[in-house]
Length: 169
Image (tube, rainbow, N blue to C red; front, top):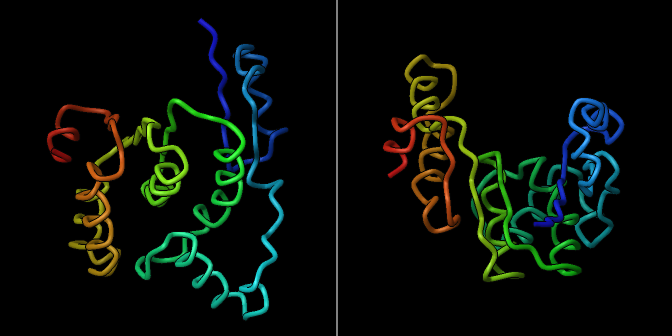
């Protein structure tokens, strides 16, 4: 069995590559660091930074909703290029803020299986943070909305416990 793995990481390649000593099989991964990505130059670049980021996110996401997350904006151009150049069987998204990338993957490769790796049920964590006045209600509701729509975006969900899985069903 031979598989090719492409990983888009948020850290520098050199930092990640330290793991190769302990896990030599990782050397076979195609690593793409968001740190190496150049900022896009497009029509939105002419606008003030905050406005350009907000409009670019809405244009790329094809939705007027949601905050313009840094991770989405950093990964989108890399992912768009990758899925136009090669076919993928699976994609694993490990952060709630990246779920909208599932739409990009589906548009480009409708048969791709998308896995959301949910270490925790973020709605439960956000609810507790809201109750303890650590986050505003708007942020809690945003998390709740995102997680309640998981079945529309992903094929499979990994969770750490049966309790978490039950919370998402």
